[in-house]
Amino acid sequence: MAINPSEIQNRLAAIPITQKIMAVAAIAAMIAVIVAVMLWANQPVYHLLYSNLSAEDSGSIAEKLKEMKVPFEIKEGNAILVPQEKVYELRLLLAGQGMPSGGGVGFEIFDRTSIGMTDFVQKLNYKRALQGELARTIGQLTEVEQARVHLAVPEKTLFSEKKESARASVVLKLRGGRVLSQNQVQGIVHLVASSVEGLSAQNITIVDTHGNVLSKPSDDTFGTALSSYQTEYQRNLEKSMEERVQSMLERAVGPGKVSVRISSVLDFKQVETTEEKYDPDTVAVRSEQRVQENSSGSAGNASGVPGVVSNLPAAKNENPQASGERGGSSSLSRKAQETINYEINKTVSHIVEPVGTIKRLSAAILIDGNYEIVKGADGKEMKKYVPRSVEETGKYTEIVKKAIGYSEERGDQVEVMSIPFESSALAGEGEVVSESKFQIAALLPFIKYAVALVVAALIFIFIVKPLMKTVLAAKPQFGGYP
Image 1 (spheres, rainbow, N blue to C red):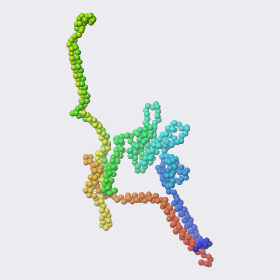
Image 2 (cartoon, rainbow, N blue to C red):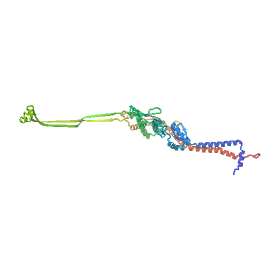
Image 3 (cartoon, rainbow, N blue to C red):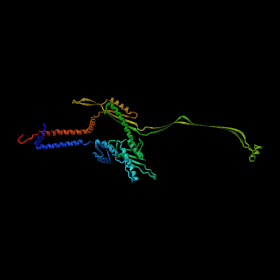
């Protein structure tokens, strides 16, 4: 049946004024609610664009986003959030323009040069650029949140007798709960030393924001001045043994039912021994020399009259004896010499004993027992702890001894005990809650639209529909006629 417009107009006129006011107010409220729900549903979901920004980077990125007319939010002063669908696009665009710069000035400072720049300003800018580039490189480590580098490079002079060496200091702000190992610290030291001309690793100091000195002034890995290396080596050794024992026992008694603690005493002494041993019973000919001389000739005595006359040729012919001619018998001589050098057998040994050898090990292992379900006095079922037998703990003790390399000569100790463990149900609930939070965050955009549809449906069912019934059911009343 078609509805006549005049009939609808008569029915509206028959509605009391109070109902009309209520109807108009309900319609206005309905429209306001629908508009609010739609605005809330269409509000963009903000995701993280950059975090842990410096004040300079935050300001430059915010200014750029304003120029691009992109909505953004700043939280905690160093984190910028943008709409989810524009995160990756904005990162590419900002990276192309060199943002964020890492909180310092790099070699891009030379992109803007002026003609009147002096040599002093050039050197100063180079120093700033080198400090900024080093800070950016160090800041790429996972454990480092922010880095700052200071360089003290002396000027080169021709007439200076004393040559000053370059020095550097690095300040690190570590992320929450993160710790740098000594290998990483030494890596930073050598990185800085290799980047600056004339800078040695001994002249580099690294500290954190709490004032703790992280670097050591020596290159000796196991020297007395580097006790941190010894501590780290000992900790890694103990941790490796604990993980090895725990993973093995958990296969037998179940995960979460074993707790292993191992302590070690290590010998970090550096011992070098040089030995020379001689064997007098074993000799060898080193060199041999033989010399033999043979000589023969005649021997006689001088005779004749001394003077000039006896030496004249005529005098020699007439009187040979007067002329001083020699005469006598022949002789023969022989000489032999022999030299032999012997070498005694000698053994030279140079022994360098290993550093960080194990002097003693102590292991304490706690193993959870078994549980039986029994009925209590009130008839309810409950768990009863049953400790493991001495024979079973003895087997586990032998297994642990084999795993850690037990030595009775060193005085090693191994103790295995069976005690009840607390339930890990709370930990499992915590994991479930965290997973549910992650799923809710992923479904949040869809939830917003679902809520908007539900609110619109409720408004239609409880406000619009009753109002339409009231309007259509009202009957016009004319004077004298019901």
